Length: 502
Ligand code: ADP
Image (tube, rainbow, N blue to C red; front, top):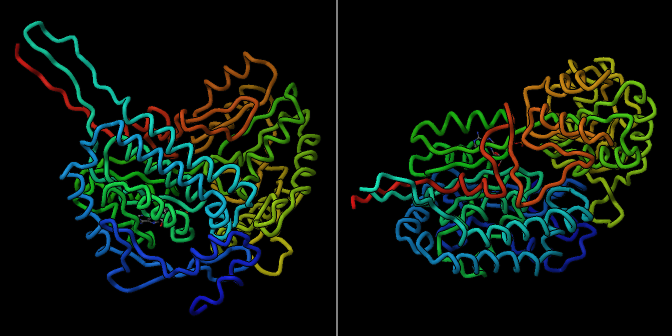
């Protein structure tokens, strides 16, 4: 595809005039030093609407030269200290203002998110955008609650600790929750007094760019936030390697997470990684079945299954395996797959052609391995767009590829288990450890299993609950470091011990 066709056609069905105006005002630029600038190379790339494969907008393709420039501005802003040494109550006000601006423009942001990512507007409106505002609001409160300690030192000494910002933080985010991930990264970093360089995913740069405009509107001091759009190798790798970036926070695939970690060794950056998952969702016969079926459906089909903590391995006790998978398949079939801008749509397209091919590839692998698609198992019937039917595979063994590898699509692998021990053993038999769930009315069993599962988050009788006050992150190859809650304060501060001789 060449130049942008009409925005109206690419954004077919969009209702928000503001979203259309934003798209029309492209090509989009990089936010560096408080100004919107073109990439030094002059290059741009296309961002598509995955529901109709048309170009929404052209976006600047930042690379090493732009990252270098962004770091210069960020470093200057950090060392001059306007932000880092600003009174905490004042920092709070800025974060609250950003939260308010997100809410004020919620409709436009929701529509941009749906156009760029393909997720149902129902989800953008009810999860992504309010979640982003809430995250800024939550961390606004933290600015004035970052305490050090007075340590029980020898009487001849007075020793205390200070928590100081880390400095220039590079933040690389994925395409599945574009604005929400930007908020998870930027809000705690700013609350602690850091300056940031955010790189949104190349598939979904739009809401981060609109957030950049809102951040400027909030009056945040110049150069505290830079936004560099571009590709992984190029913009992303330059951030990971940069000798003057103090910390890199990454959310994305385990494969790229390993590259980020390697690249960080040059200047021993602090690193936090939130990576892939293959989360077990364990259902016992004594569970409230209606809730368990509904929760399991949300666990794997929300956001088209493009969720790092998706409940992609559904473990069902063998006595009720057929009955449960029938109900799950029925519910999957009832989900409306189609234009994500329609309020009744519950599943939109996958984010990109590449992701579409990848997921369809796994559907074929699953069938070859001997799994049966009780429902779905193929692309959607739509003429255009990257649609995949919600799929429930039965007769799955935990050793199969579809149960071991992260598919990142609407594909549930239903696996039978014998008893508690077997459920825990199979659930933990994975290289990942991001999340897990257990459904049972037996409270003691629920808590025993929650302790035995090797995962950063465990849900009991629910799936996918996330709140800015509670930590999120992985065991094993799902990464390290905890975002959200008070734990993100550890990621974005460093501790100084001060001794005074009395
Ligand atoms: P996915 O496979 O789901 O697209 P990725 O891990 O490839 O997830 O991408 C997540 C983010 O990491 C995106 O912003 C992407 O541009 C970026 N990225 C990809 N490759 C690299 C890399 N080599 N170095 C730094 N960032 C990268």
